[in-house]
Picture 1 (cartoon, rainbow, N blue to C red):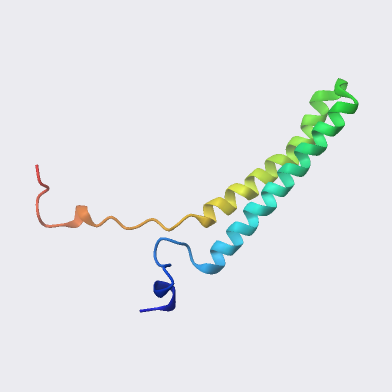
Picture 2 (picture 1 turned 180 degrees about the vertical axis):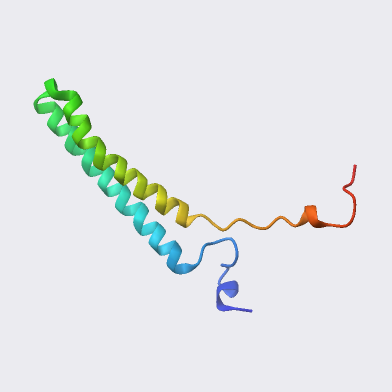
Amino acid sequence: MSVIDKLGGGHDEPPGCKRIVGQLLMFIGILVMLATGICTVYVMIDDPSEFVLYLLIGGVPFAIAFGVYWLGNWMNKPPKSEDTDHLSDEPPLS
């Protein structure tokens, strides 16, 4: 029995390094999305006449940050368990 199994970890969680990097990417993505969103709103309050320009300038980093967050979320998901029920020799119960 490994140390990970003794601590309650196992096959339901991604490996340690992948999990840490995934959480770090999610954190960075959230911070950048917050910063760009707050900055865009602050600039639009001062001069709302250039609304589309502000959304274009603030939207690109927001979209990139969302992609970084999504990548971190994907890395943080547990691995899919292999479903071997369909390989059984017995017919399914009906």
